[in-house]
Length: 428
RNA sequence: GUGAGCGUGGCUCAGUUGGUUAGAGCGCUGGGUUGUGGUCCCGGAGGUCGUGGGUUCGAGUCCCACCGUUCACCCCA
Image (cartoon, rainbow, N blue to C red; front, side, top):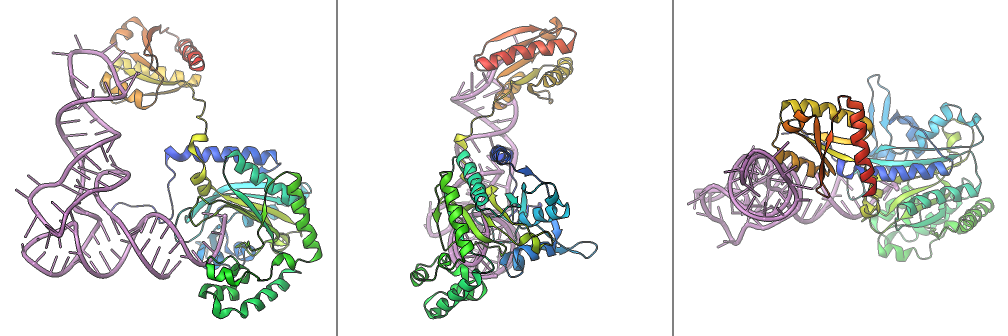
């Protein structure tokens, strides 16, 4: 039996890696434009960090984390999300003194022990974005605008849904009202809903059962229970989005899976991901920093799922990378191989993308290899050429070929060859 | 954790009501006279039919278990 990869852990093969790079590159560009800086944080943290931030009673902490004792018997876990680590780093390095606000993002793998399905893996990758230091509703709008800009840049057909979850003041009251409402309907809704009404009542509202949804048509809405300041905040968030011309819809039943969210929450929704419909999601987490032992500073952020983006991004819209001259070097005989070997290195030094075969294949085989490499030029170095101190340069597209002189100075002759093929590459 | 579908060469799949040496396409590889690709033609390598039991004279084809995988529930990016 050969050793296989773990369930839910996937290799990203070379033929799809360009998609990942394209997504990351455009994201980085946009994030920087909005004033965010990259931070790299560890994958492993003390278990306590996630228990305190995400919430002890959440599914993530209760049954989905990769948690184990390290060799010194400290309980560590592989991060299931990015925000906690970034905030930990922010606090640990006293970043609050650097300037009044910090805008950070990080890109990397996250781990959750779940059953894999479409758009969901055990190791998955997120781009996680945090704007720390301001509680202004316009920052919420700005962060959403950034997420939206990324979706546009990737030509994704997604919609933005927003909601407010209230704060420590008003959410408990809403919860109470909701639980009262639910208690009266215990026998009319599904078993899952009854379970949820105890563990996470807000969750009940987005049950997928149509029957349950019918029961909930006049369930209390969080938006009717917001306290004055939360209501103002939400209004200003909406105003901010409108100022930027960003289309959104309010979904008062949207819930987040992590305990730390307060006030604004939002999701970027698509219909093209099977059961998973969120490509990205986030919200405000005032109070979380203090909870983690830092100063009481507010924050907003979001995460987007790389795998989900990769599933959605249309390969066709990615313009082919500007290709550098692509050369395949064909040699015949050992002497030519030696000469070609150093010629290849010299051309690479010039910036050309060059390959050659080392296994002494026939001319025909080497030509076939050149074709497979997508080489636009072939340099043929046979015994005749070697004898005359020259090489054959063949254009694989037009079929034309010409001889080029090889001087004794490898440097100048590589420059010469490179100039020839570079100019023609640009022209064609 | 629950449910359903699927598991045949590197990839995508055929394999009739169980019956002699398991097939195709793509890919890989060699060749079609002496040193030229992409098309075409010919040849070659590559499979203990997921694993282990069972039924049968005989199983890729039926039954059971396990494993893997996919999708969905739960939950979530």
